[in-house]
Image (cartoon, rainbow, N blue to C red):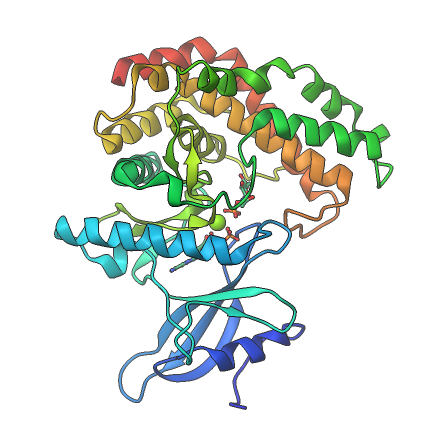
Length: 373
Ligand code: ADP
Ligand code: GN1
Ligand code: MG
């Protein structure tokens, strides 16, 4: 085995690194990024001549993704489709979408001895990945997510696997919350009564978008479904959102949810797990710049129904995410990676504070959409 530097407690890494077809000498691997789901590493290689080359190595979360092979089929289908569009537009397909480095025996991914699926991707250099942004960068991310949806308009949706069933089915998220509450596996329910009541009071809200879909007022599209600011790479030279990443939940969904999840994460000035709730405030100014950018990127492709429901997308994605954090907290923190015991509870509280702010400013949110629609 090659002598390379890998972190302690990551013994499976050595097995995985042996399998891929690196074009240069491996130097080492370190944990990378701030995703909550996958195991992400940055791998460094030294070619015979020239600068070091970096790769992103990811082990897919088994807790989140029960059928990783299907997920990888989606990944290849979506990135191939985007690659063709990018080339046709005169863009750079190696920077504007993700690609894979194969294993030495020509496979697209590797399943390790414990059944976990790993993929390797070139690191997209000269980009930044932000946890919070200036209004200008937030608007750039909005243009890129809007464009992503626009570009996927012609994608054959029926070929996509549902990588997480009922992912943004807020009614189902509510039902799963009730089940976790009923089970109360960790005996935590008594200490979070206020948060539990917050969810129970909003049972009817959980049906708003789904009912609009059932009534034909919202269309099903191919959407990203996880449009956090840190799922986009911003070009250091142009300051534009150059590449939408984290494609694991790209599947049929609602455009209002892609809009809404970005607002949930980015239209405020606090961390997702901020403990001091006085610092957690929905910023309608950031909401406005995101709205402008998203509509510009979507190039007129949104229907009147979608425009009408955009503010609901923001409110519901924030409520749903808070419900998911609380469910995971009640259930013993199996889904979202935590770095300290009450992190999922802190995350729950920030989301509910933002929901409350949005409820209070809902009319103003609709007026902003009307201004740019
Ligand atoms: P998770 O599902 O855990 O959020 P992501 O796919 O979002 O995993 O990756 C985690 C982080 O790794 C991203 O936020 C980003 O910082 C970084 N990253 C992922 N892919 C690339 C890439 N190809 N080039 C550069 N950075 C990347
Ligand atoms: C997860 O994978 P990541 O960190 O980009 C989650 C999202 C949540 C988000 C909350 C597959 O996103 O749905 O909104 O955390 N992804 C999955 O920060 O569950
Ligand atoms: Mg991510």
